[in-house]
Amino acid sequence: MEQEKYRKVKLCGFLVLALLTIFAAAALAQGAERTLFEFGARRLNGATPRSAVTFDSAGNLYGTTTAGGRFNRGVVYEISPSSAGWSEQTIYNFGPFYPNDAALVFDVAGNLYSVAVEGGAYSRGVVYELTPSAGGEWGATVIHNFGAGLDGQYPEGSLIADSSGNFYGTTYYGGDTNNGCVFELSPTSGGHWQERVLHSFNGNDGAYPQSALTLDSAGNLYGTTYQGGASQVGVVFELQPFRNGWSESVLYNFQGGSDGSRPFSNVTFDGSGNLYGTTEEGGASDLGTVFQLSPTGAVWTESVIHSFSVADGEYPVTGLTIIGGVLYGVTPGGPNTGGTVYTLAQGAGGGWTETIIYNFGGTAGGGGSSGLVSDSAGNLYLANPFWGFLGDGAVLEITP
Image (cartoon, rainbow, N blue to C red; front, top):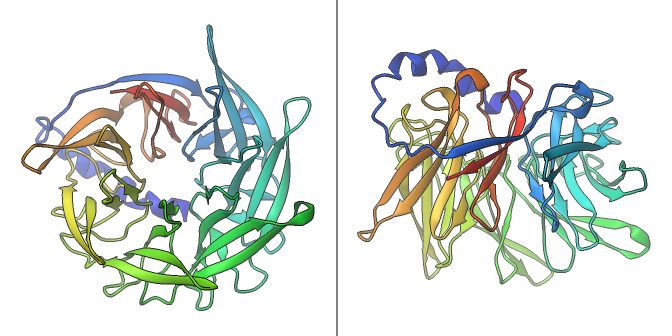
């Protein structure tokens, strides 16, 4: 599944190079890039980081790699700032289960949680907890094994948590009709966890979700599916608590043309209640879109606010970050075949203007970058699986 995500970027690399000079006039305001840590000097400290990074309250960053480490199945790493720069420490080596590109999530006690797409008791993925221990290494506990029944298989998207300590996520497969599901994981007495399927997709209402979920202030969940729906190219859905269960509504069925196709990522709210997301395909050049969904009562209206071209990025598969009303995102392909970091800002007349703030590629490599996170100063942080002299990836800071 990881290889499929980036298949189109590699196939169109030759075309991008051939057309690069034609599109040299694309809007570009190059931000400053700083490499905080580069993997590969020792394969034991990990290689090929794909997950978005996660901050703790002290300003340290955490993430996962999909290769390297003691068993060459990836690691969980921590990088910490100091006056001499950033230093890396491996806090867990994956072995019996191994990750995809899902991010890590902290609980209030300082434990980390995430999903692994494979491995576990039934080889269908797990939810795991990492707990700090003496000596720097963290202890791992599997709190749920997928694949025992209709509980879902192959969790792809990152977990989210509510204020009560429950986790919510999606599985790419499994459920009642093997089209994937949305699940809840709740703590019970004695340190145990109870998993419950909130919704199983049937194909008509969506299929094969790969994104994280978004939680609103009323406790409703929002997400996307990569396939399924009226045109079988994905949907945006909402789940509302209803009596003793949950009720699903399809907010938008993608049609597969100029409106976008195959949303891979989560959706993000702005302060006015609009939802924003990306599609991997569709749009004017069939290279992906950024879309907006705006509510009027119970009806949601979709509009494409940007269609990607060879000049400014291709096939976006990560979600958006909103800072001061401006949208920030990443594409895995672009002018240098290494991807872009871009912004979309809305003008007084309602239109949106895209600016490329960083181009990956060239001698340092790039492509397939994770989603963005920001600090209080507006600096952006991400992991890039192919960056660096050895091509084993790095954690980067981009200052717009």
